[in-house]
Length: 316
Image 1 (cartoon, rainbow, N blue to C red):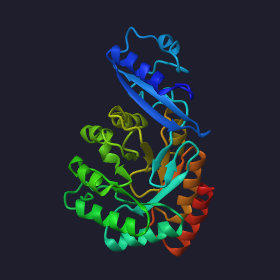
Image 2: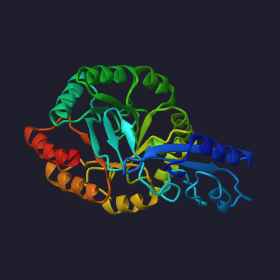
Image 3: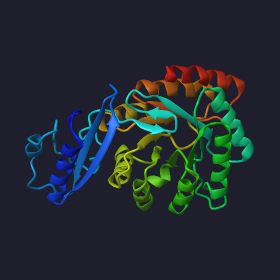
Image 4: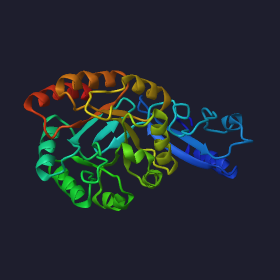
């Protein structure tokens, strides 16, 4: 839609789409110049509809046909970058931000240590979870209600927004009750269609993590499942290689930026310490990432200083 399109003109386009038996998905967001734009996606069997018929309607700036399994989240459907706000932080459309926390240890001590380092480095978001899950039944763990409550308490005391892992759809109500700032869906959740669809029905930011076990197409298709429910507050988070090696597909990030308008952040590799993680994080930002996710609970003083410099650059 045109930046000057009225609400009545938006409703007319939605009505035209629905009269043809398709579902209309309305997405509003600020583009890089600070101007709010509205994009309307028509999803369904579009045979018989022509883009030109919509371009003749009042308020429509451009209409095009998008094919493929991910239409709403594609760059074709929305050329301008999306911006997603999580608490006081904004990701995408010239908004750069980060979140810090603890991926595996959700004890009160670990969360308080992470919260103090996030606050010291000028951050506003504290997360828990989103780490590698063990296949062994003796080592598997997922964030539970008690862990979620502990995270929200620590984050609230530190003046930070809480971002928490969600693997089980049965815990979604607890997230809503505790008013977490965003949901963090780890890589295995990308194949949990029912979870993705339920998350798509709520009004809360979602961070979708991927590692090298999922392709870029699978990642974007998972995002489309969320967007189909009406929730367009989606942030993509690249976690790199699964294992102990320091690995981050920077070329894949650059390719992804051409394919989707969604904000993209990176979970900086922890293996190998600060020396390889900092340049990889910088490379990811150059390739188009708009933020970082940092496991900072066990940071040393040197690591705090090293990351603080890079985070100051992001904030600037």
